Image 1 (spheres, rainbow, N blue to C red):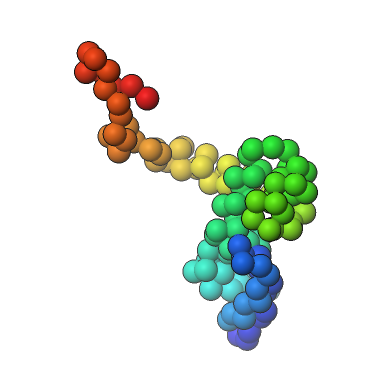
Image 2: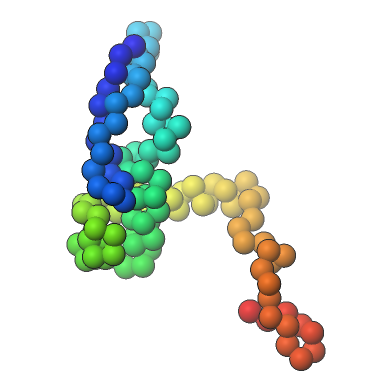
Length: 122
């Protein structure tokens, strides 16, 4: 057991986080349970930065998101590969949730407009 520093990117800029590190002598692997508590991604992004990167990644090419959209929109400077990895990971999480039967944006949650016949319309 010890401490490890990790650099992460937030919407407010780069941060350095110090967290507990645990190492298993039997299997040789180590982990930092605090990463999951903080919602840090494999791309070293905070949840809010990950969301911005993924939103930009689905709007245009990964390269355009990295070089044009994110610096201008959110002041984030990330590599094209970071946008790609984050966006694809988010897509994987959505795919898993859908496969598990999770429903997004149920119709009952929306105040749909009704036409003259009383039928709901978007």
